[in-house]
Amino acid sequence: MAILRGKFSKTGEMKYISHLDLVRLFHRVLRRGGINIAYTQGFNPHPIISFATALSLGVESYGEYFDVKLHDEIPFQEFKQKVNEHMPRGIEILEGKYIDAKEDSLMSMVEYSDYRIALEFSSGKIDEGLLEQWINDFLNQDAIMITRKKKKKRRQRHQEYKEVDVKPLIKKFIFVRTDRERYYFDTLLTTGSKGNLKPEDLIQLFEKHLQSQNTDFEKEQSLAITSINIIRKDLYHKVNGELKNLIEAVG
Image (cartoon, rainbow, N blue to C red; front, side):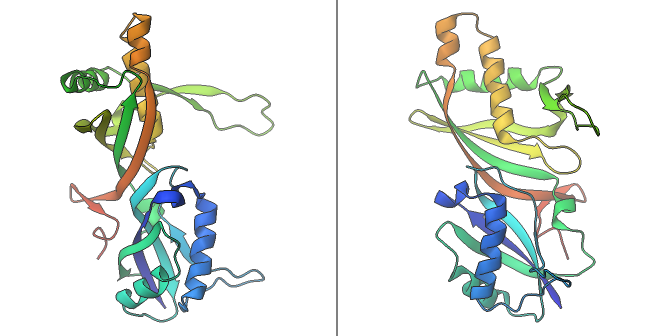
């Protein structure tokens, strides 16, 4: 038996398929590619494959990961070619390597997600210096609160909510460039068991902060975000104080 850890991209129209559909797609493609994948035991055997963390619907990525158990170790380039031949446009295996069975699972290793976010505002052009100032003001708040659902207790009839400070989960949020009336930001967010903040929630909080700083209705409306495009660039695990992707972080 051998365990292969792979990295893949999910772009274009494929950003609209759910995580469950992605799992089914991999099962089907691995069979079509003739990959000698290992299966679980029991009445309903299924391929032994796991993924790092689910990607939000509508978000593209160049840094998704999977672990798959194979009966026989084949060269990664051969695996990559066989699988990519059957993948639909938008899903592509990028890199991979074999790992020890004792390595931590992908889900337990994920600590940070790196995103590139493109925004458009209803006013069109916005001064870049102002954008940087607004980001600094946003991050310099004592707390950045978000409302989240509480886990329902047994027989609980009504959903309860709680306020959570997500400021510690924002490791980076910077303005990087503009292209006409589209503005690009990079952000590094905590992901996984130590906390989780989605980029969509970050932008919603940022927009709310912008509008709360302006009492003038027209100016408030001009700061409304009309378009959001999100790309996950990679997933990271911290090793000796250094961020490494989930392939670099093993062995």
